[in-house]
Length: 256
Image (cartoon, rainbow, N blue to C red):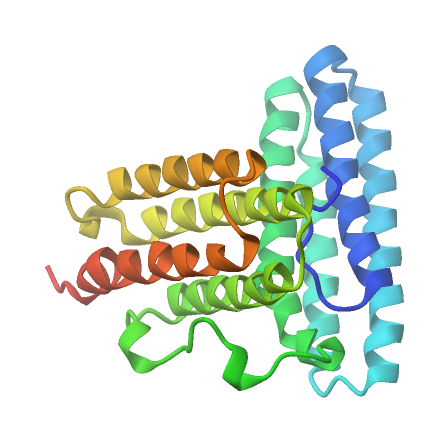
């Protein structure tokens, strides 16, 4: 749980992201163990206040850093905050609370994974094109803008993780980051399956499950000290690319 947020390159923003996800976990445990409507409503109100404060802090930093897309990014902050406030109004019972927390987690994941990556280069002092593990190209495009956005985000995440692992010998750090990749990939796979609907090819969902199972095994092996950390990128590269080319591109290109 100590490193469950994507690394933007700014320690203050990263610490805020980590705190938000940890707060969701705390609320989830409270709901699971002893649901109380008043307590839940209070916890959600305070979470949204914390979220809006984080957005404010982040915007101050991004403005000072010269982020060209700050206005658009700020609008997404306002939209997310308003949506969560509206959704929370209709949370009346235990089942509603569970659904709300699932939606809350998905929305925070989605924002961090897809929107916040746009400002990573502002704080990235060591990313060089020559060091990229995976280069995005037309060969990886599915033709679906939203899924291509997902895939590019995962590629960026793996590239950043690869550089971190090449400079680290800390297997606890590696396992924490790989678990985060597992969590974000699981979220993406769910969104992808929903987007494809009836176009989902035979074996596609099963391959998603196999990928997550295999990544779990790799995490266990890394924890046991089986691999030198810089070599893990060679696994992650093909773990993602083969699936995109074998399943995703054919599925999204179908017209039936």
